Each structure stands twice: as structure tokens, then as C-alpha cells.
Image (cartoon, rainbow, N blue to C red; front, side):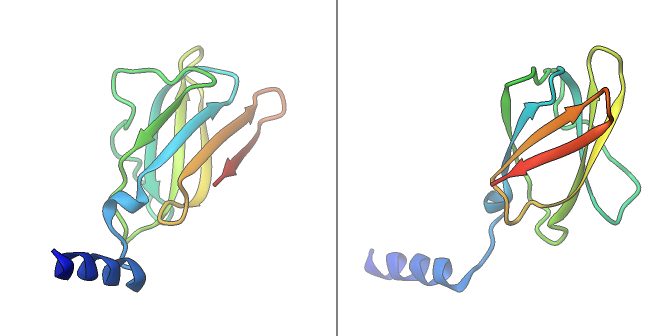
Length: 117
């Protein structure tokens, strides 16, 4: 038992990154319900599949997303809003270092911002 404890402590001190370490919570503070969420490496043009699924992320709600692509830590996020199908993008999140992203959006001005932890 002591060997396992020492082994895991050594791994933790070595800075080894596990896929679970890159999971993050997305908080919707845009003022609108989100129907779709896409996460893609910053350097790629393909958004891939909707990560939200059949659920909506209402304003004020949060959802944890599993993220295992630790070779491409810097990711962009795109959402599609429920009420008008408009799309908005946020760029350059290092998901290997962040645990929480709070999205903000001002539809009148088109300003997007995010608070990160």
C-alpha cells in the first residue's frame, strides 16, 4: 500500500497531466439559452460534433465537459443559441489549465467575453 501511495504522490509532483485534469465547467451567462456547444483546437477549421447533445444550457446554468485532448490544450468554443440559431465564438482557452469558463455575450454590441478560473 505504501508503494502505491508513494508512486501516486511522485506522479502528482512530476506534473503529469491526465485527461480528467482537462475537464472543465462551462457556465452560461450570455443571457440566452444555448442549444449547441462545439469545442475545437484553435488551429483547426472543423468544429466537429455538438458536445451538448439533446439538452439545452439555460442562462445561469453550468455543465461539466470531459476534455481529453491534452495534446491540443488551446481550444475555441462555439455556441448556437436556441432562440434565433445565431452562432458566437470564443477563442483561445487553454483547457489544460482552466477549470471553469463563464461565457458572456452582449447581443446588442456583439461583444463576447469570458471569465476563467
